[in-house]
Image 1 (tube, helix red, strand yellow):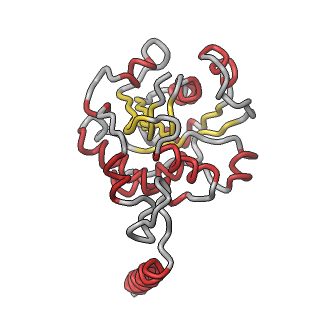
Image 2: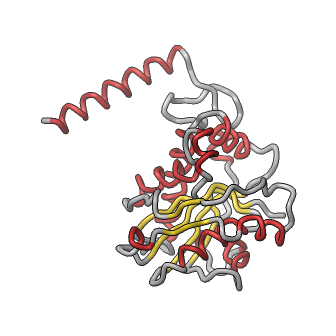
Image 3: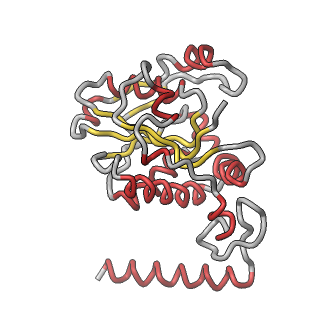
Length: 241
């Protein structure tokens, strides 16, 4: 009975949302035009134009090469190319700065679909979102990487481990730093709770955009330090510098 009540409640809520969307359509978070559904934050046209990398299908792709000699990974990829001024950048901006966690969940589902289709990530047992420094997460209200992981979890049917890694030091923005400066900025910034990780042997570390990979390297190195872990990395976007 409780499950039936939840189903009816969910159906009613979605019906009300769809009806409201007919009269007050929400703009697409990519192009700014009306979106086709209140539960879809991007229009079909913009979704079809997202620049897929195809990295998930190929060993030795540019994201994997980025980490060669830095951290031992089973596989790594980014699903889309990132470029300034693009529709994808607008979507990420909505996710990170305009209180739109639903954008992250939606894009996370696209990530999960791509990873399952590739077959190279099917052995992953759990998702680990790259943690934010607590004060930054409180200010934003959520962690964008966790939003992506929640969407991926919906598709991949594996849990999200949102409390196995903690960011223990506040770091400066990475935007204007070179690769070495970025590494020095984040080294030692992550604490891993080994007991919470121990039930899992294959983890997928999730983030929004990878550029030099310094932050993911630091977090991945901390996770691998717990012992007995095989690690993969998946990001929404790849920013080629």
